[in-house]
Image (tube, rainbow, N blue to C red):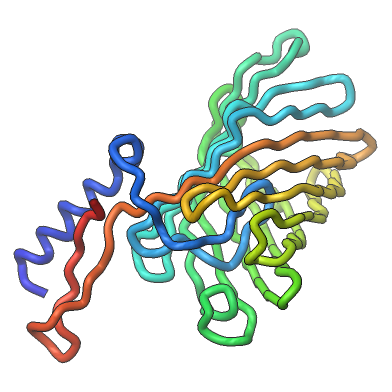
Length: 281
């Protein structure tokens, strides 16, 4: 690759970080991709190279015991920055309703920056009849008005698709913020027919915090509506048992896909020609 091409790629990478500004500037459509909302787990696929995906829950309602809160918004930002690689940024703004004395009303929770890579391209990538396998890992960042410390996370995901439904299995381990204690999450996501405009979905998971000896059992039912190639809308109802306490959550949200740039293979230098990057218009 020539120095001019390298400089061009560096400038393009810097421009790709300006996701919010570019998102407001245009509505180019990206290829089809499966929605990850409204689940706690994810699938063994990534955003295509040059595609940005916004997973947004404008308002979630959460209740545990006698305490209730609004999560407004729950946000996940995904960017396909290399073939089979994705950058993931998560955060949730939690607003407590009548918080206990001394507790903050507003908190920014579940903040993290992950890298996700497809290890084995398979059925989700239309590369073969075998399962797709991916791993997502990275640091847990300090929360605002919450745990102001770092942690770490890794999630091994295996996805399989049949004519009638798709299944994603998440094997997730975390070192909790601050004390770096082990947290284990095992979940299964089930989706209805992938080509249906409206497909039923569900998720079951168990999570165990070893030091606190606290186990969470959770079940979610919902639906995803494929409104267009660019938009999915979702709804989910989650019931959970956190230790001895019952928790209920209502999730409403959307996934928006936007093509920022694309790679083109052209004739020229080298055996396979020259790869050029260009912003989508």
